[in-house]
Length: 243
Length: 182
Image (tube, rainbow over all chains, first blue to last red; front, side):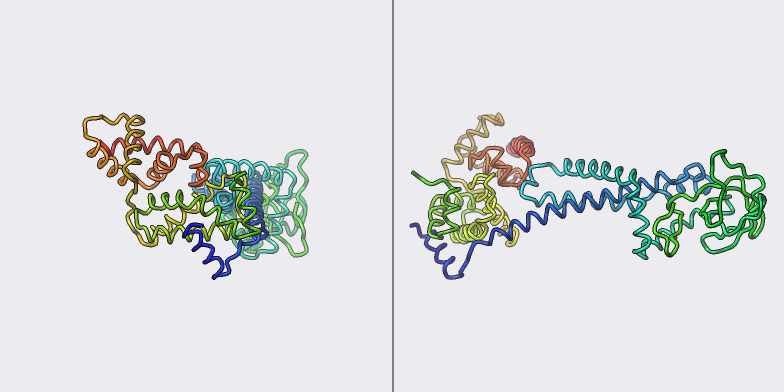
């Protein structure tokens, strides 16, 4: 036996060094794959919610907000796009530390993560699961609800002819009372509103977006009434899911 | 019949004396590799070698049988040596003996079309200097490919990089070497 071998065995004996149990390595490797799975899952949720926001944004009225390109950029669900970016970064980082992780180029892991997030995210969006997740977040995570309310204020632009809120009363075919996001009550002239033939008539309690013109401090003349896009809908206590 | 490395790993888990056989099988190769990475500092190299084998022993259960044992052992050796160099912030001189240098010159000459205008001694000095001045990522592949005689797959497993990246790195390393040499 060589001197080095003797020294090594002596050190192993003296320091009571033992091989680390196999289960610890299995736990580590399984843990890494589970973390990778979670990053893809969270990335998919972010994609699903971003798709929900994009699909329900009323792009026709965005130019009315008056900010030019800024308005388009502002209404993008960039928080969710950032979350998706973060999850892709984490997925790449975690995968790199798996046993075989170094065999695949990081760019390929990024591409796989993006494709997986897009596919699963689209399924979540198409099955309305993304909407359920988003509403649960608003219900359970107060900072997220506050963030969303803050973002929604950009849509409250009566001077630009956009007035979202909840219908509190309808008086015949001519007047409607609406509470906006800041609980201000508006009297709205709806005489000239033309609803598409098959569109349901607005009902008390509906959350809508009124398009038209501000005529006074708290009066508005409506040209059109549209259902409020998903992100403008306010969560109401006791309400599990909004339609 | 001589047991394979993989068999010795399994036997070492049951009987630590069997680990001595693995140590004996690899000590010279790994010691030489350490010296190539950190320079010819005998005591230090042996200390690092001891740390390497202790680490190998502690992690025997993590040995992935999809790899060659030698690739795994080289990977641990590489990491320990580089960690040591980072801790001490030493500049890393390349360590080769005369015969290896001559081999290296011959191989690099044929691979990179070095003009044969100088004597072998001058050539050896210039080759040494050029390799020492190579960025670390290029030097690592040059050492493993030309001096340790590893193939792309093994180098990839040792440095934890995709095999295709090793091909690219090696071809860039040769180009950089040629540039530094001339």
